[in-house]
Length: 188
Image 1: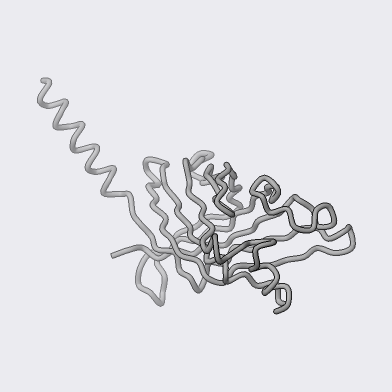
Image 2: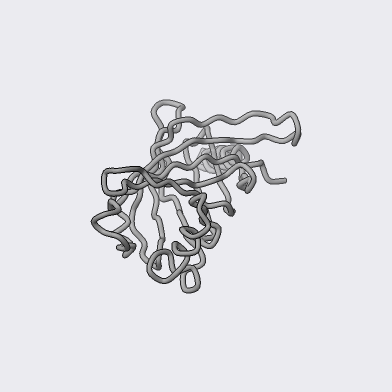
């Protein structure tokens, strides 16, 4: 009887792990963007153009992981003078901190729907918890790639000053709104 339970447990575990899949972020469809208030006059928006990483997802077990790497030098405000300034040591200091990362700790579900990701953002060498609210998540068989592709739209808010990004305070708000759309292609 004990042997049957052990075998059943091993089969269940292997079946569950067979359902889990890994997806590679599509750098042409993944762009973290952000915005912050400027003196109450306007909202400055920017994005990062170079992103990589992986998503692992198991819908049956309601688990997953997310690892995103952002090339800090790919920052784009739509104004070259601002891009150049944002890369220097007074802001993102890309020479010393070339990569921004987000690593998940857990996925949260409501029923079968992915609704949040708890994780840690590392910016300017400082790591702090940042929770992502998942507004949309869907996987499909992609007609062009002939592979499963998952996509998500997520948002978060955090204080940039918590990470030591203090340039322009208080004129530029310390509160930052983050928006990230992700598309990831199932790995072979």
